[in-house]
Length: 163
Image (cartoon, rainbow, N blue to C red; front, side, top):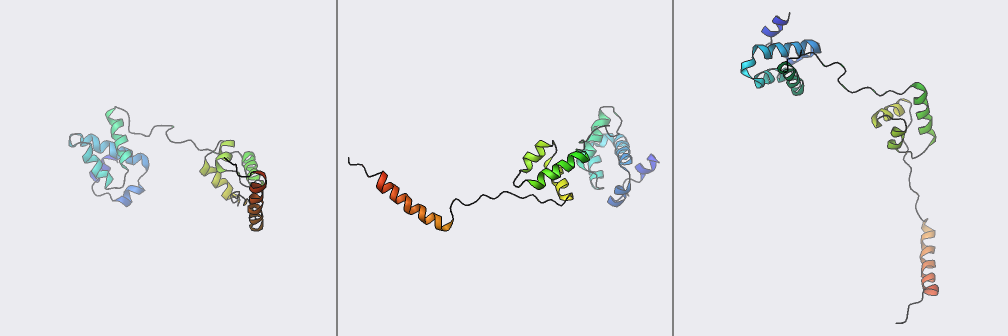
């Protein structure tokens, strides 16, 4: 089966490459590189880039071959999923719902989750993040009265010095 993949590698289109399982793609790249070792990495790269395989995947497989390791994916590689237990998720939702203006950074650090995961949890529970608005220092009428009072204070309590 692997030999058939190698013989038909030029006729494989991008669509067909998407249908092949990830492990089979790795085997295909590894066997193709072994057969065409003297043509170089770039030859293998160009062939599989045209088929829609990412550059980093191709080079990673080639590197594993050169190190004498099987081309299979490393077990445990990748980012671990951050999931909240239902109880903590409920606490997060309640905390965000009853407080206005709590920052995303503060919430995500409190529950030790990423900001994007926190946003997803809140969106799933139909909670919109409400940013706290700062209130104006003075109302329009208060501002004019403050200017007059400021002038009176300066005039009465801080007279100009005579030097």
